[in-house]
Image (cartoon, rainbow, N blue to C red; front, side):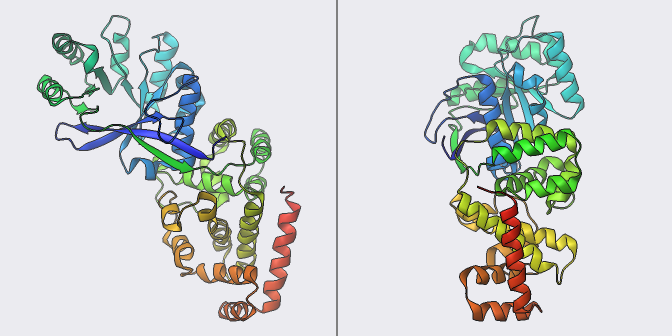
Length: 405
């Protein structure tokens, strides 16, 4: 299985051609121009997982809305609520048949703060019941004559929705839709879908399964935290998810314990379930994973001598994240564009500065065997070389006990 995640985004603009949103589209490769879809469910799960886990809403959306297609199964599933409602417009596909169950589910999601767009809408008696629940209605410019388009706009305008003209390919089509009163526009006239690629760090399936079992049995947070610490990918994905704009937190979540506590057991279970079904079969290099986890644990142990517990949690994250450039095959500056962390953590990761930077430098000196640098850095942190050696042995023993492959 590929170690890359693919997604396409196509801009949606206003009447002044200002960007207001992206439609996120499934892609199976970096250069695909259309979606090769084996099932709408797989495509929907892939778009959601790539948005949440592999790319992140901050980097992918840049503060704009995301229109995400959903067919019946995805709409009715708990996966639909993993996406942050502040960033997302659920695009109900034209293939969705209107039933009492669908209307009830849409009302439930609307109450939870989600917005809806009706894709490729056709004004018919059976589809009219969707309009009171919709925020946006998308009309395919190429599928209707100018007269038909004008008639549908007049009918839909009885409801307080925004109209989106899609598949606008020429200046004439744009002007016609603008004159009809469309609010937003999408199509090749403005921009073709842009394909984006992100490197995937795959979590260990066994660890995810263990976490699912513990969450199902309402295990204590400290037991969940211990499992998360076994897996670099899980830690990275959890912190990026909890720090996404959709949670609206006033401060960044920096520790695993804090993230698990905020998320709650039921949302955590849904998140892990989606992670399990989308994880690849090519796990990250075991050697690199072991090194990252050892580095995180050693940073944490060294901090015990001089820092508070909350800072020790942060040191674990600093140690683990310091090897993300190797996992993701990109510079640290680009890594930090894809995960929200505090300036303290970023300073340590970028140039080994701030309160955490010297600890990371000390751990790197331990790994390199540079005794002179090790002694100097230990002294600057008021640590004896013997304390550093003991912490190193404890970190190695701890990682060995995790039973990593």
